[in-house]
Structure formats: C-alpha cells, structure tokens
Image (cartoon, helix red, strand yellow):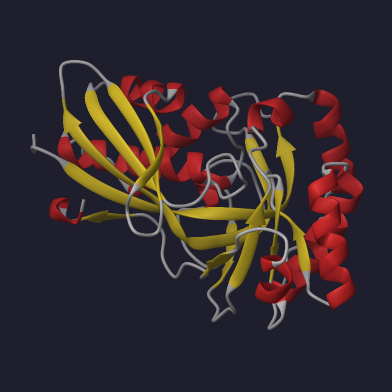
Length: 288
C-alpha cells in the first residue's frame, strides 16, 4: 500500500448521443460522438479509516472558488473497489456544465485508488467500476468510455468494451461557454426526454470535427434539449457564421473557427480548450 496516489482524466464534450438500456450495467450506456478535451479532473487518493470526498473547483491560478464535501458516486466507487480513502478531486472547468467531469472524476479516482491500494486492475477494469458508479447515479452514460483515449470519439456501442472509433487530429481549438448547471440526473432520468433524444440521434460517425459540429447541431435542434440561453448563443453564432452546437448534457455551447472566441466572449466568459491527445494517466504525487 502506498501513502498516496494522483491520477488525471480528461473531460469530454458530447456532441450527440443515444441512450442504451441493457440488461446489466455493463451493457447500459450510450452510443454517440464527441470530443475528448485536455482539461479534466485531477484526483488525490490516500488510505483512510473511512471514505471522505472533497471536490474542489479552482480558477486558472489555482485558488479554490467552489468546494463540495461529498460525492455519492465517488463514495459508491470506493465501496465497490473495497477500500476506504480520502479522495480529493480538483478541476478548473464548471461542474454539471457538459464537460464530462463526473466521468473524469470517477475514472481518475478508480485509477488512483487502484495504484495506492495495489489492486492490480487495468485501465479498462478501473473504467468498468467508474462506469457502474456513473450509470447507477445517472450522472452520465458514455463519457467514461469516451475518456479512455484522446481525440474525436465515436462510440458504436454502449459500455466500456464497445467499439470506439477515434480520430487523432490535429484539431483546432474548441471554444465553449456555459450558462449554469444542467444536472444530468434530471434529464437522464426522464423517459420522455430520452425517447425524444433517441429519435433525434444521427446513426453515423463524423469524419471531421466540422462534421461533428454539423451532426451535433442537427441533433440538438431535434432533441428538444436547447435552453433559451443556448438558443440565443446559437443564433449569434449562426449570424456570424461560426459552427456551434450545444454541449450534451450542459447548459452551454461549443464552437470552432477563427471568429468563435470573439463571438462567444460577447456572451459569457469563454473556455478555450484543446482536444486531448491521450486518455487518463497516473501523475507524480508531488504534482498535486
């Protein structure tokens, strides 16, 4: 057993998705496509007599601007792994805003716990545990599978073991804005909303990031998920000729193009993101 371990997992912007309800957690998830982003969640895990979780969001200088002292999905994950630990998670992007941070936190937590407790699990096995926690707590459907690698992802089946096609890039920067949280459980737990989402799903993989934006926008329009704030932002992008769509699931949009930052900065603070070149990984403990 080690004294502590640190792991990082990139986040994910989902462009479009179709929920899949299987007869087990392993076969439940989603198909769809999105972008793995270089910003994500870093997690520190230390052995303890009982499990305690602290979630911190920092600004870009490292100062804490938001702190939450519990996380049922992460606490469940530690129990599923058979360990008790202090789990500290850290991110710079807004939580519940469509950046796949719950998936990133669960994946990194599983990896760090695996390392510190010498559980002998592979990345895929860690991801299975994380996926189970995410599905049971309705915080996501396909982000954990997507975050196992980098690039632009297209998931052709539900769960961790599904076929995933990845385009490695290079890609232009992705600019995003958010208008506040859109908690996933309220959407993913609605049968009526999920039926409409299923009808809107495009059964194809994008061949480029530009095509992803096109397919994602069509999906957003048909899904009924667009909020008034997102509609306003999309209209401004359309007027300026900026390819944009809604982050799934989040009350915000993502866009590409030379004029994207300028247009979005007139709406809300902009997060300028790079497409990740790799998936989750362990970090030196002193990097925390």
